[in-house]
Length: 142
Length: 142
DNA sequence: GAGATAATTAGAATTATTCCAAGATTTTAC
DNA sequence: GTAAAATCTTGGAATAATTCTAATTATCTC
Image (cartoon, rainbow over all chains, first blue to last red; front, side, top):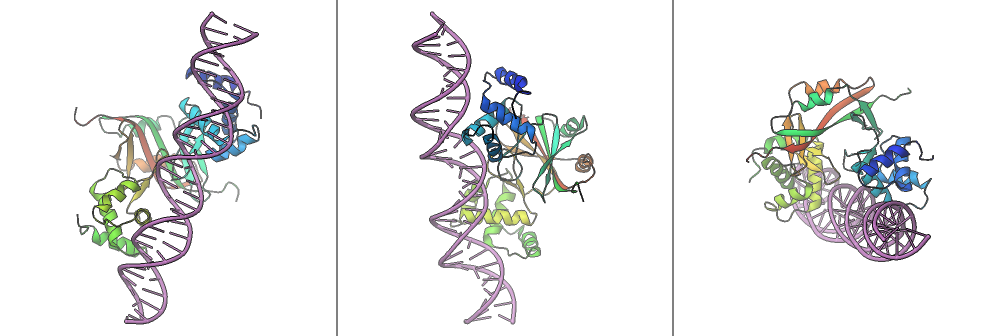
């Protein structure tokens, strides 16, 4: 897993925010893109170590925070419990399967978020809407 | 603040789940109903102490968890940070004001949650939908 | 009222995250 | 190209939120 494909856009985004592209940031980002299962910082740490065995957990936290700042990654929090990270930039909702604990992305029809926003009373100006479903997902194979 | 008004329904709900109404549970619930600003467990703890000075933080956590189990209270998590508690049972969304850090309840038109649920692909069966807005709320007095 | 069950309590333990200060790396200015 | 400045990474300590544990207390049942 060599972080080349996304190198350009990552470097660009970071530069836009006055930051540098580093191997650590590239690998953290690459790990998120490779397996999109909403990992925790600890899980990212474990995966990144395969590529950069000497990276520290603090650095993983730093890199994740940086990527969130650059709008390349979304931090997701439902339930108390560790923050999870999602590199899906398209507007989407999350479905949290209470049985497996897994989180699935749910694509949203265009306009839905705006429609939901339109229920806000005067004086409330939302720049983001987050939708979280909870329930059971049918097992893909059964 | 004597927890009489809600005593009946609280006792009933607890009994339905095979649990007892205790002074601690009543005061915790009463505190949530009295000031609906989505307090953290620590904040609830501070408020409850006015009534029950010897209550422990562990008990506050226990009581809150119990109330959540009985569906009398909703636990709300956005951002990493402490869980907040909300005694509003009507379906509603939350608006998180990024300037003040305050959270407001947003009433939802009937049917909206079902409409949102309808975007779920086949195989996903949601029994709850949570909607969180983030942005700036106009100051009431200015 | 004795025994069983349930709830509360204080403090220890755990988990997730942030902070910090030192060292390494990269950039900039000459 | 090198020195100084700026930025990053690192490991460990510190903090914050929550859960666990074992002992005590309260409540319910018969």
